[in-house]
Image 1: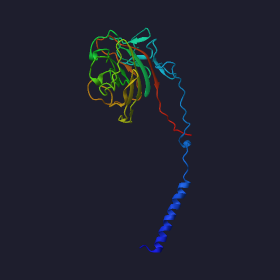
Image 2: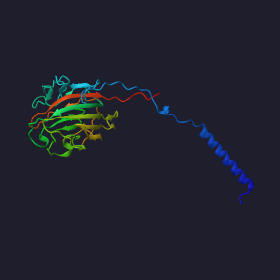
Image 3: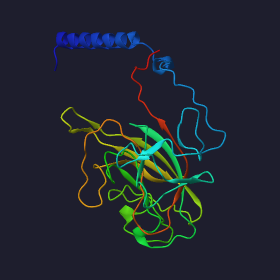
Length: 273
């Protein structure tokens, strides 16, 4: 049996602990919704277009149906783009200067682009309405990070090279291709890779792609540039143009319209009251 004096001391100690705990609970500030409400930074006002898919007020319009002044030949970045502009659209000129790229250089951005596979399209597989959207053009030819454009309506090919794929890296989550002769659209969110001072990868590139309003790439992490042959790898860059491909297949050339982009810049100031 515990002696009476030890029992009394134990009760006293327990009472003291309870008193300290109660005091601490009483002293703790009561949580308030205002503790998690911030008023800075204030986002800029962007006026959306009256029609969904048209450029909002802060967009960089890359093609509005009038001319190719926002584009140059990708082979040297100085020769004017020679793709044909007619009836408000821009059509690939096969045998001309080849791939074209924007004069403007981008890092992170939101992009809208529309294209049409000709109703008279011929060929099969990769040789049918082939082009490509290069999210960052890092050099001549087909260097960069490509999301495939081609006719994938009842036209089988390797699935990591079909419409909506990150070429040779990611199979699209769905085949949302429209019939040849109908306009299609891409809505893309591109997060560019970041590199350390020695050229090593600090953070990889990510892309989210909607094809005709259907999610086909969901924040996909790229393994590097997209190559026709060989494993992907990164090459350090800061900003880069957006490139459209003049593919060398013999099928009828495709057309583009309504191309615009919005630069996406992260906040550099912290959230404050």
